[in-house]
Length: 229
View 1 (tube, rainbow, N blue to C red):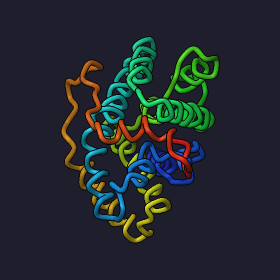
View 2: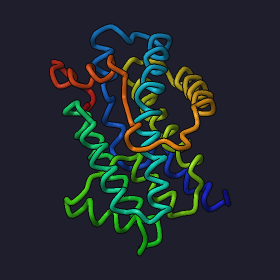
View 3: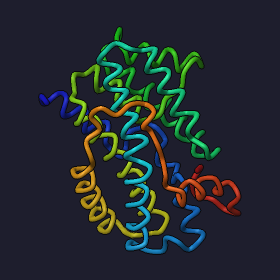
View 4: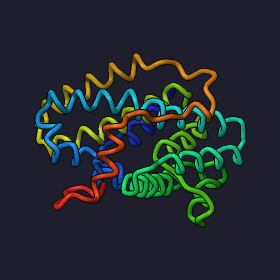
């Protein structure tokens, strides 16, 4: 990875990236309300389940495949992948949040990547309402176009999602900034030990984090909310 590609990935993983992710907890707020997450220790347990059972096999694998499709120039395959990802998001608020974040991410990336390539094509499809996007898919397409490797791309997707959810926990549990950084370091070790996705196909995309998915579904029933999902 050259310096320009490295700085691009840093920008994509920055907590100030303007895609609205800071407004979403993706079920964490519900777990706090239910008393299942009360401190850094209980959050770490829940975070581990979310990372291994939902983030890696869903967003991580989707990004892995999207990168390969973009490199191969299979844009129709990318649209089919995006439709599969959207259809697999079951919780109403989390689905709406993920697609809004993805659309905004793609819009920003479209302005950062040289025009005329896959990112612009994908953005035009999404802007016209002919396709949908998540942050993972948007970042994978832009990274492939920028010549960034597949493993680096998946790492960036996983790190970005971890950082966003930990930032939500810092504010909502709350766990404190130092504990948040310690958890982020732990999360980096999870990323490093995540299994290879070589040979995986769209049919392998899955999510089995039942506790999180139920929490995501129940979020809209909370009496008072800090987050949109």
